[in-house]
Image (tube, rainbow, N blue to C red):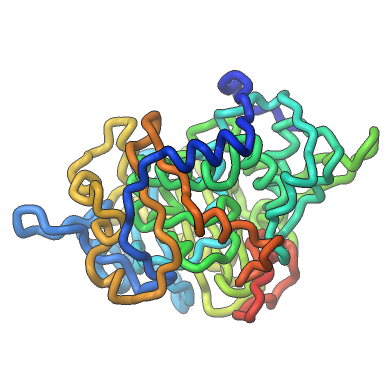
Length: 426
């Protein structure tokens, strides 16, 4: 097992009755409906006649954005991608960076950003049937079983290596339930200024209205990599996982650029971070690599074909960034979290306006939507929990999820495309 950094004291798991009571009592700020996958995010509301785009105006434009640097890979098929310098936060090149798309299991980076510091890695938890009852059919699983006691570290290895929705749901129940966890993830996204993100489920599984962007996923990765535990988990290639009693079985990381699986060579200097796939969402991947003391982040969303394409395009963009990225001027920046002194001007303009305030009228005109979750306060403040239909929508297994598939990356090459019942590659 890999050691993780020390974290906060053991959290107390509230009863279901307490969670429901808190949900009923918490005020709920209603957000405008969000489109499941509009073409792209648009400007924030105008301030002094100038539209505001998180990270810079050029990141809100369509098409490839690059300045004074040459040699970008040809024939990239992704619907959205971004290359950034991890340390400076400079965005070196991007393509439709704020386009809102289904994130699949790359959303688990936000899950880890939100929960990783809450439980000590040595804390143990005995899993119950209720903890696994709402795992959607078709999910990627690590093999968590009711009646077995796991350490928190083992559960996080299941999340990072096997993209296990069963491990995500157990940790969510330890945190007080799915609704509370989703609300905290949305508040965390707001603090990170990831305003393209709308969280419906903590695992990234296909749900109507669950959206993100290449820009936001890169924010999640950059924030997570500052945490030694996050960095350690996403860089772990194999680990032993409990099978009951004293038995274990080996699990392998599904990040093919890290392990070299499915005919790929391991990418030199790769340090993570997270891949995802569902048959409805397609492939998504955020990768980070270090060479000669420089760390780059690349996010690629929804290339046209399946198989290794998402990894190949990520590797090509990393190669470009290391070879040519330093010669050009930045086209934008990865903003700092509000809680760490990030500029509040853009985010404050959307306060109280939900996703409509964050993305403009084009988002609501695009239709779709699903439930929208309102939030009151931010990280460290009071959070409104999901009410009524939102909680019901997350009980995928009991009600039969409308889209039963998640985003790990276990399946073989070529498993792409949409189906009526989404399945998660693990």
